Amino acid sequence: GAVVSQHPSWVICKSGTSVKIECRSLDFQATTMFWYRQFPKQSLMLMATSNEGSKATYEQGVEKDKFLINHASLTLSTLTVTSAHPEDSSFYICSAGGQGAPHVNTEAFFGQGTRLTVV
Amino acid sequence: GESVGLHLPTLSVQEGDNSIINCAYSNSASDYFIWYKQESGKGPQFIIDIRSNMDKRQGQRVTVLLNKTVKHLSLQIAATQPGDSAVYFCAETPRGTPLVFGKGTRLSVIA
Image (cartoon, rainbow over the protein chains, first blue to last red):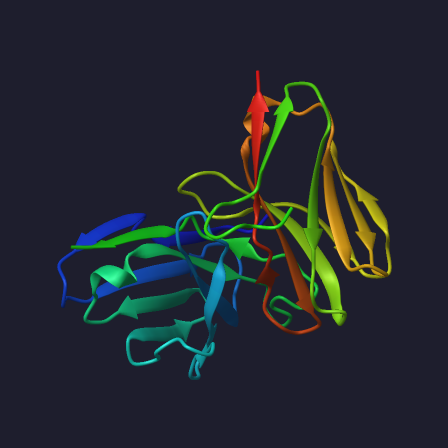
């Protein structure tokens, strides 16, 4: 299957600082990538859809000014958690589909996830 | 099974037995379904998928069954091994929309 690489795999930051998480599709072009958040013992919750060359689409209840998404190329999307607080501590996971038909009846390929801890 | 609060339902099976993990989905418009396996601290890993025009699909040691009438999906794992221990999620998608994940079931294999 296709490879999606996420970096860093874990990060600890102080309250009030910002953290950037990268998601790269290594062997295919992804016009659309997705960002999920997962709290302990819970399922993945979609935060936003990242669209190459345009604005991200955020799910209801997700603050777009807090979770900044940039999808500047067909192989890279970034999620920046701004002014992080302890309640933002979570496992963040990105996924990508194929060019032209992302997530339309095709499997999604997931990154390894990033464990964010805000202290 | 259904989740209770923050606790994932857990299925414990003996090594070598067959496992059946169930999932109820909510959207009757969903036409594509995927089972994912997630090990601790890792992203979801694709196991098997099925489209709504099918009711059964088999892979290596795994079988997915789809019952659209009652909106039910199941994953069967044959000859369960310790390496199968993980959390399993079903995911559904209506055409053209992002995946929606179910609540997950923790599979614990007893050696």
